[in-house]
Amino acid sequence: MKKIVYSVAILSGTIIGVGLFALPYITVKAGVWLVLGYFVLLSLIAYLVHYLFAELALHTPDFKRLPGFAQIYLGSWGKRIA
Image (cartoon, rainbow, N blue to C red; front, side):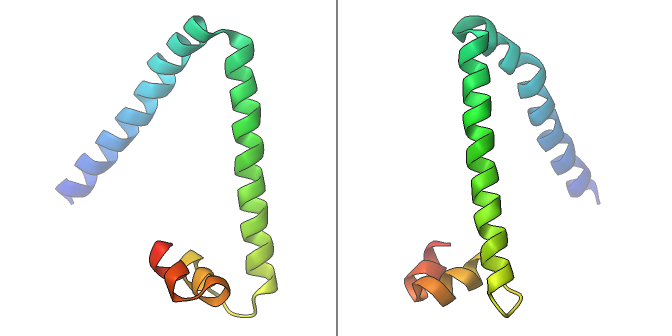
């Protein structure tokens, strides 16, 4: 239990620290429009990846995760990479 609490504390501290300190600093140095452009671009890429994965999951008859889909559609080398 102690290891789980430490792991969650380190992970949440890192995420909160980046969001609280690094992102505003980068925005000041690079510019608001550039950071906003990156945010929009990366949001669209994340949306596209999740949309394609959802379509793949809907059109495959069995319940699988990413390595299973990679094995079905790409073969054994795809499963090893995934």
